Length: 227
Length: 227
DNA sequence: TGATGAACATACTATCGGGTATGTTGTCAA
DNA sequence: TTGACAACATACCCGATAGTATGTTCATCA
Image (cartoon, rainbow over all chains, first blue to last red; front, side, top):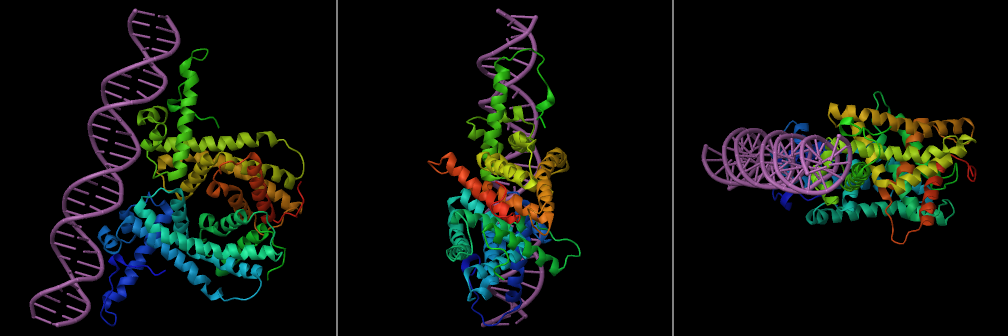
């Protein structure tokens, strides 16, 4: 799950000099700028120069850290997924019924969609690009591993709603369809959410609650149950 | 709502020669090929040559019928919306309670998303491009009218669920949020549906029913009500 | 303190794709 | 039958952009 650097080289020195301390921050800055650009304009319409401009920098800096445009995109994808896994980590050993755990998981997921939406949008785009099979064989190989990681993440929720249905807390006809519809609802903020001026954390949590409730109902969850 | 041709010229002759009879079919063929290409690769990643190749033809044919790539895209957008309006037409003077009418409208809408999904995907992309404001001022002007048409289409559903809530058949916190979530569910087939071999109309209708039910529940509709 | 390499910036190349200018063919009206 | 024009195909132009080759600076370490 850890992203390997260009060339996979590693420093052998002990301790961190300025270079080591700034490397990650520079790399992270590039990833964030790239996420914003891809988010706003899409993959094809975003040029490396666009990303460089957003950084008030030049191409050289980007190609120093990333092999290609596809590689940069893939690393943004990876970063977005890593954020999701990290956010879910505190809940991984949570106890309780599946439908209750689902609610907590879904809440965190929607929170991620809102607070890191540029990255999450890139994840969405990456999945789409992979499924439509547009990229070259080389890029497909690059994405294969990332896509599998994404699938495992999706399976977490899929398993929860399947278990919830067996326990009678969810009711739906087809698991795959229900899973798709659920994720569409939970992911939807990446499309329609945009921060409002003067927005508070409470406002955002109110939004999250509405989204989770909608998905919950869509799964046939009984009203008022699940905390 | 009627698409004007390149230059807006019209034949003054009476009757239809071969030219007139084949014009629309040729134009329609281009629109369909363009819809497929845009659907598969997105706007920026689709070249005019791609569309031409899909038609086993060349650029000249496309530029003979459409002024530019943006214009071609806009016409696919328009065609997609026209299909939706046409499909809803038979229901426009339907009587009954709002929530019941909503169900019928939603059913037809989802049916459209599945059976004309390439065009509907373009409509989605067009709305997104308009909202993110990527295009040039000229393209914005081109899309302004189309976007307003799209908004009016959306208002049909928005009005229905607002009325349904007043009548106590729907329950949700915020109208705009509920509307967004509803459309995400109803539109979602354009992302995950793909025709299966040996699929029957009954299979599709089963799918539609699941999607509509999910959206219905998400709106807080009471189980079993609304036909 | 000088050599080395990381972290960039600058300058350049090559390709691809939107758009145009022009050529070709078949149809229809007169 | 002939001139005109629609409906294309072909050939070309040019700007944008992914990628590269080469400079430059500065921290680090021997």
